[in-house]
Length: 233
Image (cartoon, rainbow, N blue to C red; front, side, top):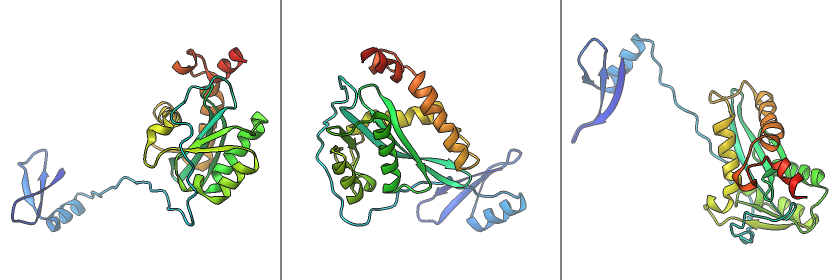
Protein backbone atom coordinates (compact mmCIF):
# COMPACT_ATOMS: atom_id res chain seq x y z
CA UNK A 1 0.00 0.00 0.00
CA UNK A 2 1.30 3.44 -0.93
CA UNK A 3 -0.03 6.94 -0.26
CA UNK A 4 0.32 10.20 -2.15
CA UNK A 5 -0.86 13.59 -0.94
CA UNK A 6 -2.91 15.96 -3.10
CA UNK A 7 -5.10 19.04 -2.63
CA UNK A 8 -8.35 19.71 -4.41
CA UNK A 9 -9.63 23.21 -5.02
CA UNK A 10 -11.83 24.44 -2.16
CA UNK A 11 -11.22 21.39 0.01
CA UNK A 12 -8.86 20.15 2.70
CA UNK A 13 -5.80 18.09 1.85
CA UNK A 14 -6.62 14.62 0.52
CA UNK A 15 -4.45 11.52 0.48
CA UNK A 16 -4.72 8.95 -2.29
CA UNK A 17 -4.17 5.40 -1.02
CA UNK A 18 -3.13 2.81 -3.59
CA UNK A 19 -3.36 -0.90 -2.81
CA UNK A 20 -1.78 -3.40 -5.26
CA UNK A 21 -5.02 -5.41 -5.48
CA UNK A 22 -7.58 -2.60 -5.29
CA UNK A 23 -8.51 0.67 -6.98
CA UNK A 24 -7.09 3.94 -5.69
CA UNK A 25 -9.27 5.81 -3.19
CA UNK A 26 -9.09 9.31 -1.69
CA UNK A 27 -9.20 9.41 2.11
CA UNK A 28 -8.52 11.95 4.83
CA UNK A 29 -5.53 12.00 7.14
CA UNK A 30 -7.38 10.35 10.06
CA UNK A 31 -8.41 7.37 7.95
CA UNK A 32 -4.89 7.16 6.53
CA UNK A 33 -3.45 7.10 10.05
CA UNK A 34 -5.77 4.21 10.97
CA UNK A 35 -4.88 2.29 7.82
CA UNK A 36 -1.15 2.78 8.41
CA UNK A 37 -1.49 1.66 12.02
CA UNK A 38 -3.35 -1.45 10.88
CA UNK A 39 -0.63 -2.20 8.29
CA UNK A 40 2.14 -1.39 10.84
CA UNK A 41 3.55 1.35 8.61
CA UNK A 42 5.51 4.33 9.91
CA UNK A 43 6.45 7.64 8.31
CA UNK A 44 10.19 8.21 8.04
CA UNK A 45 11.78 11.61 7.56
CA UNK A 46 15.23 12.20 6.12
CA UNK A 47 17.50 14.11 8.46
CA UNK A 48 18.45 17.57 7.26
CA UNK A 49 21.52 19.48 8.34
CA UNK A 50 21.83 23.12 9.37
CA UNK A 51 24.96 24.90 10.55
CA UNK A 52 24.59 26.98 13.69
CA UNK A 53 24.67 30.75 13.37
CA UNK A 54 27.62 32.83 14.49
CA UNK A 55 27.79 34.76 17.73
CA UNK A 56 29.64 38.06 17.74
CA UNK A 57 31.03 40.20 14.96
CA UNK A 58 31.91 38.58 11.63
CA UNK A 59 35.31 39.75 10.38
CA UNK A 60 35.00 39.41 6.60
CA UNK A 61 38.12 39.59 4.41
CA UNK A 62 38.19 40.66 0.74
CA UNK A 63 38.25 38.12 -2.08
CA UNK A 64 41.97 38.40 -2.84
CA UNK A 65 42.15 35.04 -4.58
CA UNK A 66 39.49 36.04 -7.15
CA UNK A 67 39.26 32.46 -8.49
CA UNK A 68 42.95 32.30 -9.38
CA UNK A 69 43.09 28.59 -8.55
CA UNK A 70 46.17 27.76 -10.63
CA UNK A 71 49.30 28.40 -8.57
CA UNK A 72 52.82 27.80 -9.90
CA UNK A 73 54.41 26.56 -6.66
CA UNK A 74 53.43 25.12 -3.27
CA UNK A 75 52.64 27.25 -0.23
CA UNK A 76 51.33 30.24 -2.15
CA UNK A 77 47.62 29.70 -1.55
CA UNK A 78 45.86 27.29 0.77
CA UNK A 79 42.09 26.91 0.76
CA UNK A 80 39.74 25.38 3.29
CA UNK A 81 36.17 24.54 4.15
CA UNK A 82 33.98 22.32 6.35
CA UNK A 83 31.58 19.52 5.49
CA UNK A 84 29.40 17.13 7.48
CA UNK A 85 29.05 13.35 7.44
CA UNK A 86 26.17 11.24 8.71
CA UNK A 87 26.75 8.62 11.42
CA UNK A 88 24.40 6.69 13.69
CA UNK A 89 25.71 8.81 16.56
CA UNK A 90 24.88 12.06 14.77
CA UNK A 91 26.76 14.44 12.48
CA UNK A 92 30.56 14.34 12.19
CA UNK A 93 32.35 17.39 10.86
CA UNK A 94 35.46 17.50 8.67
CA UNK A 95 37.60 20.59 8.07
CA UNK A 96 40.30 20.47 5.39
CA UNK A 97 43.14 22.63 4.10
CA UNK A 98 44.23 22.22 0.47
CA UNK A 99 47.35 23.53 -1.28
CA UNK A 100 46.00 24.87 -4.57
CA UNK A 101 49.25 24.23 -6.45
CA UNK A 102 48.92 20.44 -6.29
CA UNK A 103 45.37 20.04 -4.92
CA UNK A 104 46.95 18.11 -2.04
CA UNK A 105 45.10 18.00 1.27
CA UNK A 106 47.75 19.13 3.75
CA UNK A 107 45.63 19.50 6.87
CA UNK A 108 42.42 18.05 8.20
CA UNK A 109 40.53 17.65 11.46
CA UNK A 110 37.37 15.98 12.73
CA UNK A 111 34.98 17.06 15.47
CA UNK A 112 31.45 16.65 16.75
CA UNK A 113 30.87 20.39 16.42
CA UNK A 114 31.57 22.69 13.46
CA UNK A 115 33.25 25.38 15.55
CA UNK A 116 36.32 27.59 15.18
CA UNK A 117 38.48 25.12 17.09
CA UNK A 118 37.88 22.58 14.32
CA UNK A 119 39.26 24.83 11.56
CA UNK A 120 42.12 25.97 13.80
CA UNK A 121 43.23 22.34 14.28
CA UNK A 122 43.11 21.72 10.52
CA UNK A 123 45.25 24.74 9.66
CA UNK A 124 47.71 24.01 12.47
CA UNK A 125 48.23 20.55 11.03
CA UNK A 126 48.85 22.12 7.61
CA UNK A 127 51.47 24.48 9.03
CA UNK A 128 53.17 21.63 10.87
CA UNK A 129 53.30 19.46 7.75
CA UNK A 130 54.51 22.25 5.47
CA UNK A 131 56.70 24.02 8.00
CA UNK A 132 55.56 27.21 6.35
CA UNK A 133 53.01 29.92 6.91
CA UNK A 134 54.48 33.40 6.53
CA UNK A 135 53.08 35.07 3.43
CA UNK A 136 50.77 32.17 2.56
CA UNK A 137 47.26 33.22 1.52
CA UNK A 138 44.42 31.26 3.10
CA UNK A 139 41.09 31.32 1.26
CA UNK A 140 37.70 30.20 2.56
CA UNK A 141 34.03 31.08 2.46
CA UNK A 142 32.41 33.44 4.95
CA UNK A 143 31.44 30.72 7.42
CA UNK A 144 31.34 31.87 11.02
CA UNK A 145 34.32 29.65 11.86
CA UNK A 146 36.54 31.62 9.46
CA UNK A 147 35.19 35.09 10.30
CA UNK A 148 35.64 34.67 14.07
CA UNK A 149 38.18 36.86 15.86
CA UNK A 150 39.93 33.71 17.14
CA UNK A 151 40.64 32.43 13.62
CA UNK A 152 41.52 35.82 12.17
CA UNK A 153 44.04 36.42 14.95
CA UNK A 154 45.55 32.96 14.45
CA UNK A 155 46.24 33.75 10.79
CA UNK A 156 47.76 37.13 11.62
CA UNK A 157 49.96 35.66 14.34
CA UNK A 158 51.41 33.23 11.81
CA UNK A 159 51.94 35.80 9.06
CA UNK A 160 49.17 34.50 6.82
CA UNK A 161 46.99 36.60 4.49
CA UNK A 162 43.25 36.00 4.61
CA UNK A 163 40.96 35.88 1.58
CA UNK A 164 37.25 35.05 1.45
CA UNK A 165 34.67 34.16 -1.15
CA UNK A 166 31.89 36.57 -1.84
CA UNK A 167 28.81 35.90 0.27
CA UNK A 168 26.82 32.92 -0.96
CA UNK A 169 29.12 32.30 -3.95
CA UNK A 170 30.38 28.70 -3.88
CA UNK A 171 32.25 29.15 -7.18
CA UNK A 172 34.78 31.40 -5.42
CA UNK A 173 35.99 28.29 -3.57
CA UNK A 174 35.18 25.78 -6.31
CA UNK A 175 38.29 23.61 -5.95
CA UNK A 176 37.56 22.74 -2.33
CA UNK A 177 33.87 22.24 -3.12
CA UNK A 178 34.94 19.81 -5.84
CA UNK A 179 37.03 17.85 -3.31
CA UNK A 180 34.02 17.42 -1.05
CA UNK A 181 31.90 16.33 -4.01
CA UNK A 182 34.51 13.72 -4.95
CA UNK A 183 34.72 12.48 -1.36
CA UNK A 184 30.97 12.04 -1.11
CA UNK A 185 30.40 10.55 -4.56
CA UNK A 186 33.46 8.27 -4.70
CA UNK A 187 33.96 7.12 -1.15
CA UNK A 188 31.42 7.81 1.60
CA UNK A 189 29.07 5.04 2.65
CA UNK A 190 25.63 6.17 1.38
CA UNK A 191 24.00 4.55 4.41
CA UNK A 192 26.15 6.53 6.81
CA UNK A 193 28.69 5.30 9.33
CA UNK A 194 28.34 3.25 12.49
CA UNK A 195 29.88 5.94 14.68
CA UNK A 196 32.20 8.97 14.61
CA UNK A 197 35.36 6.86 14.90
CA UNK A 198 34.29 4.72 11.93
CA UNK A 199 33.74 7.83 9.79
CA UNK A 200 37.08 9.34 10.81
CA UNK A 201 39.07 6.20 10.00
CA UNK A 202 37.46 5.77 6.60
CA UNK A 203 37.79 9.42 5.52
CA UNK A 204 41.42 9.59 6.66
CA UNK A 205 42.12 6.57 4.42
CA UNK A 206 40.55 8.42 1.49
CA UNK A 207 42.55 11.61 2.08
CA UNK A 208 45.94 10.27 3.07
CA UNK A 209 46.12 7.26 0.80
CA UNK A 210 43.70 7.37 -2.12
CA UNK A 211 43.21 11.09 -2.78
CA UNK A 212 46.70 12.42 -2.09
CA UNK A 213 48.66 9.44 -3.39
CA UNK A 214 46.62 7.70 -6.09
CA UNK A 215 43.76 9.81 -7.43
CA UNK A 216 44.64 11.61 -10.69
CA UNK A 217 43.59 15.21 -11.42
CA UNK A 218 43.21 17.02 -14.72
CA UNK A 219 44.65 20.19 -13.13
CA UNK A 220 47.87 18.39 -12.19
CA UNK A 221 48.77 16.78 -15.53
CA UNK A 222 46.73 13.71 -14.59
CA UNK A 223 48.95 12.91 -11.64
CA UNK A 224 48.06 12.44 -7.97
CA UNK A 225 48.86 15.48 -5.81
CA UNK A 226 51.97 14.06 -4.13
CA UNK A 227 53.50 12.87 -7.40
CA UNK A 228 52.75 16.22 -9.03
CA UNK A 229 54.52 18.08 -6.25
CA UNK A 230 57.54 15.79 -6.56
CA UNK A 231 57.68 16.32 -10.33
CA UNK A 232 57.55 20.12 -10.12
CA UNK A 233 59.88 20.67 -7.14
